Length: 95
Image (tube, one colour):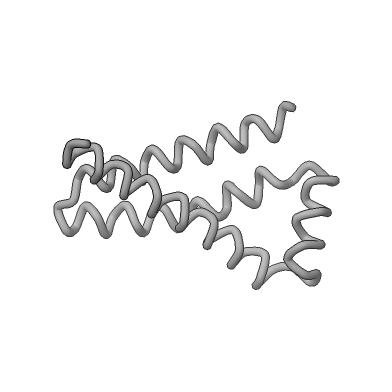
């Protein structure tokens, strides 16, 4: 695998981890219920996509850190992770 593909894949994985971490932090700080109960209720009330979208805010910080360090291909991977999150939000809203 070429170095460019590795850098984009690294950025993608970091972006997905940042998104999951942001979603967890949102649930931890703003939910009165446990993590499992909040996820279960979010799926029932059809707001799971909103939690994922709020978690994607951390991707913004990771993206600008990579740009600041001139790691443009990793930044592209973070953008790709944000697009993946947007597709997941779209799927959860309409299906």
